[in-house]
Amino acid sequence: MKNKYSIFSLIKNAFSQHENWKQAWGNPEPKKEYEAVIIGGGGHGLATAYYLAKKHNMKNIAVLEKGWIGGGNTGRNTTIIRSNYLWDASAGLYDHALKIWENLSQELNYNIMFSQRGVMNLAHNLQDVRDLKRRTHANRLNGIDAVWLDTKQVKEFCPIINISQDIRYPVLGGTLQRRAGTARHDAVAWGYARGADAMGVDIIQNCEVKGIKRNGDHVEGLDTTKGFIKTKKIGVVAAGHSSVIANMAGLKLPLESKPLQALVSEPVKPIIDTVVMSNAVHAYVSQSDKGELVIGAGTDAYISYTQRGSHDVVEGTLKAILELYPIFSRMKMLRQWGGIVDICPDASPIISKTNIKGLYFNCGWGTGGFKATPGSGDLFAHTIANDEPHKLNAAFNLNRFVSGDLVDEHGAAAVAH
Amino acid sequence: MFVINCPYCGERDQSEFSCGGEAHIVRPKQPTELSDDEWAEYLFMRKNIKGVQFERWNHAHGCRKWFNMVRDTSNDKIHAVYKMGEKPPVI
Image 1: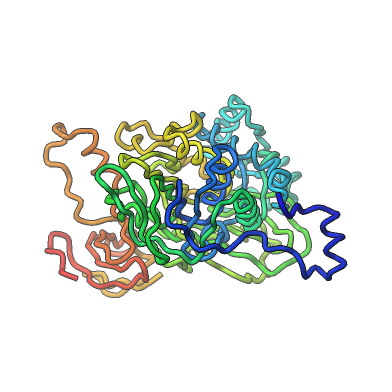
Image 2: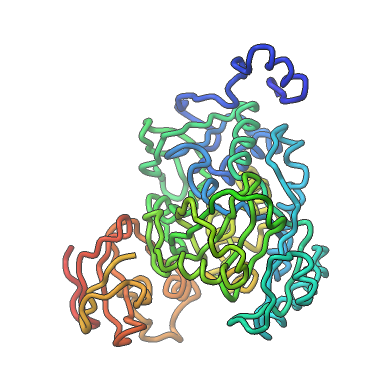
């Protein structure tokens, strides 16, 4: 890499008051033709381009982004990373990602602030206890670290939790994945963008795709706001807008797009050093390095592309947060936002070829795509380069909705949506 | 979040309602004759439109009746509400 970040480059640039740092990635105009084009400059799209260039030697490629990179769901999620999913296919997919996360800062030469602070999932009723215990057993059979904690151990791990058995949804225990944690979401997009750019990938921002040109059963190129781009391979990583792009190619997907909300509080001193999630009461919380509580709320129960979300959803989440953590009762919330998530009927993603040659989709991540960013990019790059899925994403094909071989992960989505 | 004009109860908060998704998906008349592709189309494939969409809603915390609605999903503006069985309006 040309401009390697290190203690020496930091010292060198200190002498020029840090005014001569080179741009981390370029701002090129699109070429007339590319070997492959990725639609969507979020974490997943940029990671796909990075691995296409790095592992499959496809350097003449472009990433098209409607707005600015990392400005969609990559910059709107609650940054939680874990791999404690129930089924073998999901365990393989998400743990593949987690293993890449563990060395990603070094690989990208970019500090993504990956912090393995643990993720705890709470049980509030007998069925939760049974489901979560079953999930810890399934996780361990798949080589994923998971332990069951009783109520007392939950309190020891996160002392601010209210474990009174008199509350509406008392804490009956929980599971803990210690390798899980958080990362800095913007840095993930920026790190991959810088890495891809250094290998020659064109990252083209403010370029919206308006149409996909097909010739019979294969793709020929894209109409964009910056003109026509010829290409034989298109990888779509457009999250909430996947159906909109699919429609341009005359395809229908099994997706519904809904606003998912999150919010942060005013910054406070360190109070919670892990991530706690609760499915039954629909609340999860962690604390950012800036000191803000990062709180995830639910989705609106209807299709919408408004990037807002309803107030009653936030109210419901905060009620649950206050019952579990009475200490937060006087905290002020600072910001609230919504992102549009594309939800699959089985709560699992699609990383797949389509029946149109050269058109590939990576979508359906629903409410939990951030955690999979590196693995998703790696496997999607493999699928595009070889025109065949990797064995880890073979189960996540589009055809599963025809064959009925679904990967039902509603239970392992950390909160019900 | 918006206000919905229930055809039976009048204007109420959206949080009183639940959404039943895309409207006018016709239930197969002869399910035994359907191919796997047709089942997938019926069960899972959705238009998921960004723009004007026809959808079903239920006044879950009110009269509990189902009805249809035309809404623009890009700005949540409601264009029309009509009862089940009525012809969809031209928008």
